[in-house]
Length: 353
Image (tube, rainbow, N blue to C red; front, top):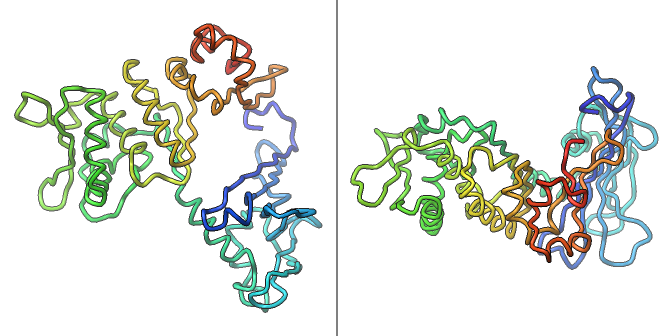
């Protein structure tokens, strides 16, 4: 649809699967939010033609448990699950006649529940929705192209805001470094070890007060008395400081998505960047997109977690997991994933034709 190679009208079916929190892992396997998106034409807005939220339980069930279903029969209406009696697990569906097709039902659910005579806490979805929204709000997306290095170098954010995550532009870098260091003592040590990995003469990187309320970043090197400031550092160095702040943070997002982190990075630093990504992925869900065969080389040991876009007809592309079994003979010969990508090996794919 995006490249207009698909005829309109058209539809997309999307499913988001969430693993249970620790206190519910013995009860259910996954929570699924499923959306059906309908595009009338290339010029018009899209609409929802299906939406549901359901749980797959661990015990034997003939079908999953639905919290709600919208736009099924017909579009613009739906059903919401209600408890038969307060605090009893048995529930039933109640019809709702007006469900907007231009908004996510999960987002407008409180408004929909106001139309019912029953209190919202009699719906099984009410606490689940609140937890899910809180979880999704902690998703963070970064694109190397969106980072504004002029802002990063010259910004002097004010002390006070509780920012724990770098903004997409990176302009609150000094504030995030200061807050993380103040709240997590070990972060300062971890960050400085990371910077020494890319610039061995690094003595210390820190956020410092400027004036009464401002913050800036100072970079100290061995045998140099005066600090360097970010305006004196290369783009690649500043990028690595940003990626370290994001990936090595003790407060990681619930989902971290980074587009082309290798941009502007010296090839010698890519193995370091790859290790930061792997470290973060052991603590949260991380999705990284890249065109860099050099970066891909350092994920050969993570082949189970690598997907490449492939096409069978040169028109439609889809992500496909790499097969460790099919790649086994190549890897035993000493090939790295990036090597196979460079030569266009069809076992890897990822080429735009």
